[in-house]
Length: 124
Picture 1: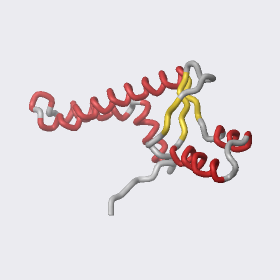
Picture 2 (picture 1 turned 30 degrees about the horizontal axis):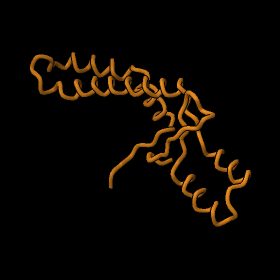
Picture 3 (picture 1 turned 180 degrees about the horizontal axis):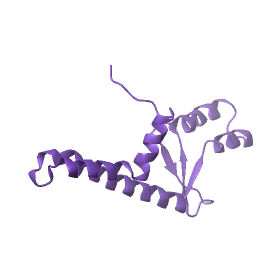
């Protein structure tokens, strides 16, 4: 999946946004004119690649982004705390690390990694 995507709308989609990957829409736009124009089959094939984000989907995505930002902020405080005398204690850092690690997205990620579902990425 590409992060560069194409969004749009349609009269049929009142409370949502249509999404398609550029490769699929580009293929349709290039192939359709040279193979006889728009047909019900080509339209149907294109629609198989369209996903509609409804209002509830968009709200869920927005909430997940907000939760991620808060989690990143908490982690930044933890990471930078070793330079701050006021909270530079081994006990505070150990407790904070445990609190962050127990949050659902982190705990789920660690569990997936341990089950072998996530792979460790290395450079070089």
